[in-house]
Length: 99
Image (cartoon, rainbow, N blue to C red; front, side, top):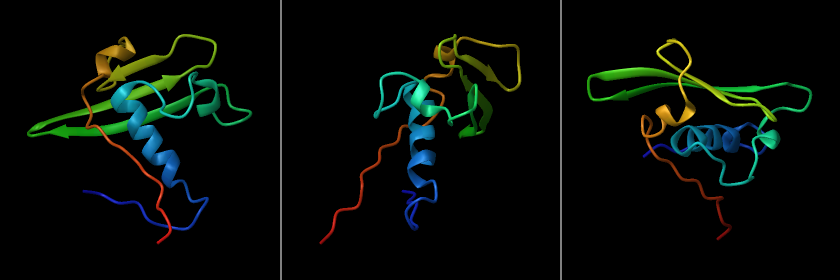
């Protein structure tokens, strides 16, 4: 198990949400991709090095609000984002509750 611990506002939730998006091709928080892109930016990129046993892949997802999202595996030509589904581990997050 991996835990991300730190003060508020340091990006822990953003990191977990990016990994979750990579695993499911969707956000648990919002129904469209637009809120996942930083204000003022035209796109967001999720890039992850994924290893399963001896197999290693670089997965890149480009979120383009209002347009088709794009994906690449191992810097190859673009593939459909659904091709990446299942290439990464699943994750979940839960806010810490006070005792």
